[in-house]
Image (tube, rainbow, N blue to C red):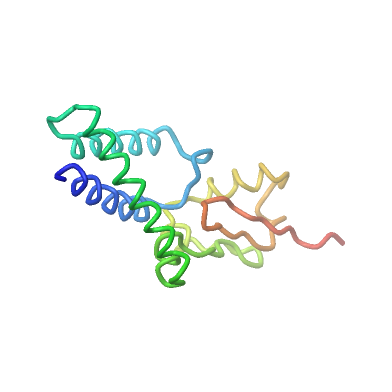
Length: 148
């Protein structure tokens, strides 16, 4: 039972911490950010299984995390507010050619991250972009200026 409680606590702590870290998808993570995520996972598993490294204890932890995940998914379905807290909402970071640096800062992004997303979509500069939105999953949607 102790493993189930620890797994539940770790699940919720990680959910909160990952929301605080930001929205980047795995394909956009820097090596430093990947390192942080791996360290969080490694430290978390130690907290869940503690000194009991038995198969039964590991399975109990896995099931506790799975049940919490299903519970969070259910809460997201029934509560729009909870869904916004857990998944976030799309955020406009560039509008009418103006980069909203305060918003970028809040997302822990820099201009170079936005420019990298623009280059991936074939833009040569941010001047070509009318609107840029960081989606809930961390991807950046870009809308180009109309061609004249």
